[in-house]
Amino acid sequence: MSPTVITPRQRVRTALKHEEPDRVPTALGGGPYGMVDDLYLRLVDYLGLGSPVPPFRSGHSISYMDDRLLERLGTDLRYCWPGQLPNSPILPGTEKNSFYDSYGQIWKRALPYYYAGKGLLQQTSNIEDIDRLIQWPDLSDPCWMAGVAERAHQLHEQNQYFITMRMIASHGPFQTACDLRGTENFLMDMVLNQEFAEALLYRITTLLVNLLRLAMQSSGDYFDMIELPGDDYAGNTSLIISPAMFRQFLKPCLARMVNVIREHNPEIRIMLHSDGAVTDLLSDVVELGIDVIHPLEPLPATNLEAVKKEYGNKISFLGGIDISHAMPGSREDVSAEVRNRISQLAAGGGYILAPSNHLQADVPAGNVLTLFDKAREFGTYPIQEKEAR
Image (tube, rainbow, N blue to C red; front, top):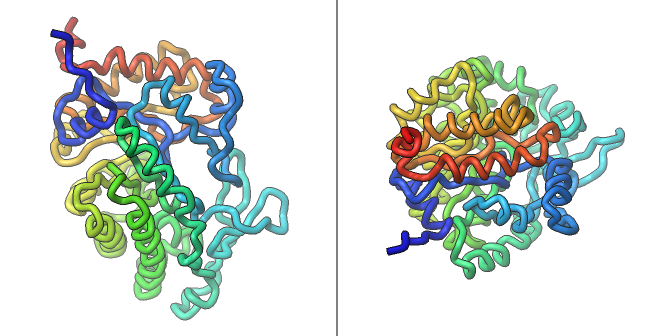
């Protein structure tokens, strides 16, 4: 008898149940694990795909969602995306390569990305100024979820792929507070001016909760997974806030976002992106009911084998592939990276192989093909038997 052929959707669902499908699922194109425009355009040419697709957004350095490319790479997830993000360009700034977002916050470009300029609340810690100085977006405008229902319905009708709703905002409560107040100021607020810090986080989270509600009302019954807004709580060596501060200030914000999603669809998978050495927060992330963590960066400070052993049956991992050294290196480097990451994370399911952040312009186009070709080669289950041959 020929082996049973499963769909990409079934493959991912099996893996996220901590069971082993036919092979390790793969992904590219989510909110924190896509590719910069330069690399996309080179891949289109390299693969002879014809003309690039129209960009799905403007004012960003990651602007394309091309199902032709994902099909060629053999990835298992497909994406819906918001019509607009609250921290995306709305008005041009007075300086070259700058813009104002929906909060009225200025952003400036440092290639290839943008960073928040002087925060709207940088000079004040008065609670009344939170609503006086910030332009809270009008969520009755249909722009926020424009095109989501149509895309979700199209993917649902195909009944092939694991449908994922990308982030409704690039930054979560913590990082948005740092954008608006300045990172150093807000970290100090969490110690010295806790009432203000909690008020600002609550107001930001309320907006994000309402955007998530709009997304779920739009097409939540079609989504297999939804990405929470990204929030980075760590650097490359350790946390930048203590676990106690995370539990006091940020865990309640995440709980509010998780709850509004679960109210609409209790079965949906929820992903959190948080860069850096976040291992000490994983027990809290699991407790919140978050199903998938990205990126699980391959850092010297993070023992991936130990993380898999302790949390591998409690949460699933998406990412893991080093974008700083392996992906810009040789094809042999990419092949070794894929083999290593699969050996560390794939046994027993619970792993979706993907870049640990956006693939950058220093990555050769051929290395992207190698990444996913080798994922198929090395990722066939059972992993241990294949490695032993």
